[in-house]
Length: 424
Image (tube, rainbow, N blue to C red):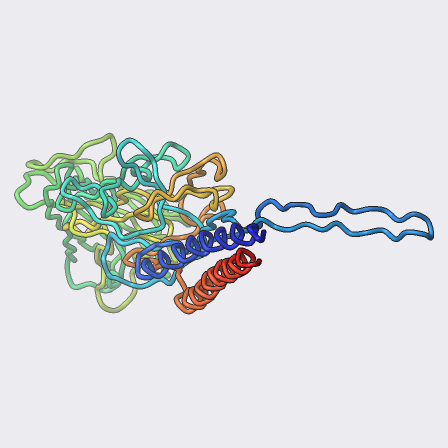
């Protein structure tokens, strides 16, 4: 009796149902951020051999081919497609899109998961987290990327400590025919972040023609009783208008520094090195000169700042999270880690766009985005699902047709069996 066709057709129906389930899941998640589309793979089941292969016998009997009948079809694998989905800008600072290979590393409930869904948030405790509560891992500032990754923290409103001024850079022109002293004002910072209002006064020594031969420089601080230097410092320029010496020390080809030797009262300097006044290299565009013309001498930069609070942050392509403070200072808050696998298709789908490693995937290899074959990240953006709806709808039609064809086999087989039963 033709029973074998019933089993084969039944396996085809079950298999096509799995195919429909997979396609339906893909279509349902076509708008899920970071979703990786799946494909059902099939293989024929064990066959029944009807006739083995045989060799010929000389010129009297030809060889024969083997004959076998299959027992149906089964699902051999559900393959996951980890190709990159379309990236869309969101403007949300915590969002991250992975461009290239790699997965975000997430710890949740004592377990480690991996995801390409970069729809992240900063929770009430400042943790960088997924929407389902997983803690995104990476490295704290100064922590090497070869060390174990730990949960990242971004606490907007947190305090950033001050930095004492170490270097103040002067630049510009002192007139070669001055009419009197020149003053330059700037604000420095002590170790506690207090503003130190500094006035530099440069008094020229003039020759009989009214030209400056040298300048005596002294610094004062508002409210302080002593000057920045015990005695005035001397600046001498050569006949070409270039700085020749600072307080008797010849100027070389590089930057020249002049250390402050008095701590102003009411302010606190820390460390063994007092702040220094820096003169850029002679001949450079920023150098201090003495040419005929206007006075343009000014402080071009200083490296101190007051205490501030974290106001915003951004995520760079290398995964570095940079915070911006109310004092204008920027600092690294951490670095996002990415993981890669020898066989990413061996990852186990845990739902919620989470995956876990298996013996088939191999262990996770962590690294900084953009290094060792890992992709980069784009802050303020999300990677969408990589589901191709046109392809899925085509696959849906094919699976439906195959499903119906298998049901037709069952009805046809049933008709044949009925005919056999009605034989006299």
